[in-house]
Length: 211
Image (tube, rainbow, N blue to C red; front, side):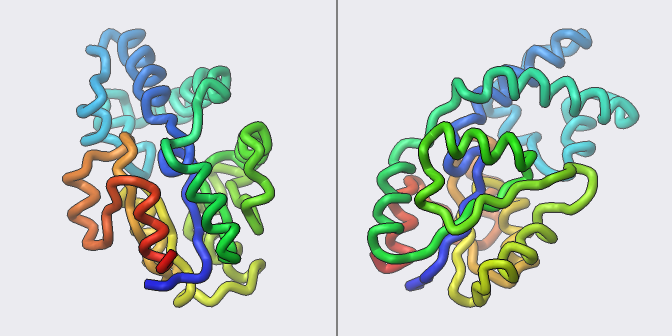
């Protein structure tokens, strides 16, 4: 408690985009003769590594590169339809006003991440916006370690806020605390099994920082 620095996951945590992921993947399944994808079904199947997630959806493992490219094209074409999660803007502003530092850590492609954070006018809130330059090279945990080093942040002062069990794994790899937000990408039952605080609203993150 009383963390002085926050690392935010982007997709799902700050950006409300699970509905778009469901729509895109449902359309992809139907094109392959599979049933459409329902929201709760998606929440119970989605996870990392993405190759395994695609297999759980009924696709062949060898088709992953083409599936990943198809999903990315369809998602990126509509990404600006997504808005922030309820309360996100106010929470970011409150953290900044309190003098706490915050950053974004995401597996999202860096140019797209930078663009949408700018589109939403959020750059002033963040000391850094860290995505991946190559989705097949450096992973999220490795990028997170580099981020901590770049910012000079001591892990024991940091809270990572995410929305998947993978974010909990990343936090453990970084040696930082974690809180999870059930935003639609993974079912609440899965997040509660991670053994870290689960917040029902982003405003509850402020309590983790004694704000």
